[in-house]
Amino acid sequence: MSDSGSGGHYYWCTRHHRVETDADVCPAKHVLGPYASAADAENALQRVRERNEVWDAEDARWAGEDR
Image 1: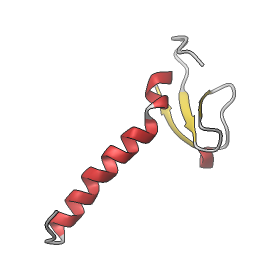
Image 2: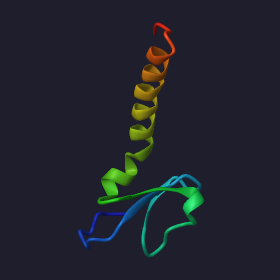
Image 3: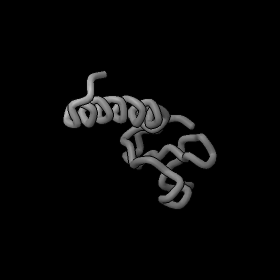
Image 4: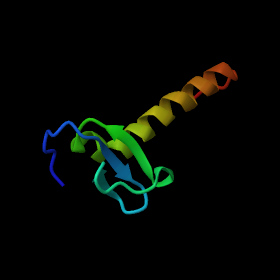
């Protein structure tokens, strides 16, 4: 799917492992988003991994654990 620039929203579907648009989006329990571009939606899982790593490190520091 390409980013048409139509101003719509894009989502990453965790069920179908693809970018979806407002026109064909799965139920909310299966998607991440909305994102402004197809490229952002396509990179959603990477952003989730990066944020989780940061939050895990912050939790470890807060709990007094060394990582």
